[in-house]
Length: 259
Image (cartoon, rainbow, N blue to C red; front, side):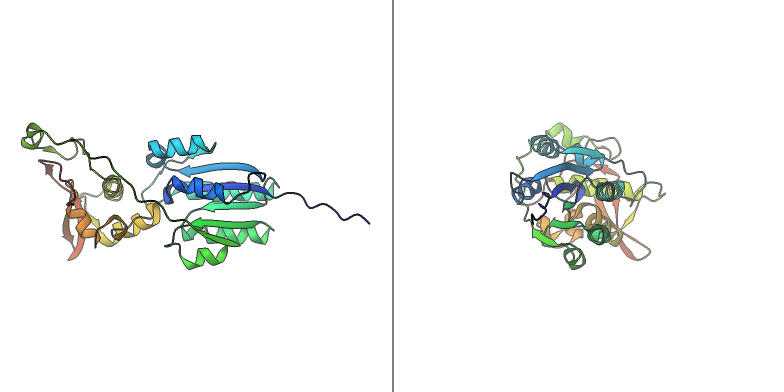
């Protein structure tokens, strides 16, 4: 009697672009046999992430569909919700049965459990910092180690620019490292609508970890305060006797991190 032939897995590769680096695409696709049936390649992120040249090039090079999700309110990540909904739809509509989720965000643990209950196989590609609850929720966990970013030296600031002070809201800041951009955007997002413009240090740290998998130590600083001290457009302060951060009132020159 002939045995039924098992159908080939239908694979969906879904990337949480806000929570990983573009190099993760090469690593993830390298885990999948070239002859495998990959039915979906999709990358999810907010406007700030998907607008970056490195992400645009990586998504185009590997034929990923960019799924742009605007952040409508501070602290709310609509890209995560979109990824989860698409994964469930693919599973329920029988379009995919094997999922590679590229993220280190523990919020996806519930999605892993739901997909597995429905008979799906889930692999997570995340960094070493991925919480144990997410590693245990999937069928298989792969550790991805991002390469160290190498930045091209910025051109020197002209003497005229150093002498002219402008309000921080009007000057175009040009931090030397990408993490300064992330830091500034996070403070602006959390401080929106607040009269004093301050953001609690703990609040800022939690936001950066959740939405950018971002920490001071991984960027070469011992603490978040030390990183803030190196950012010309931000300054450490206090609020209700607790550490906080606020936009600097003015910027006279663009400071560079110490070598």
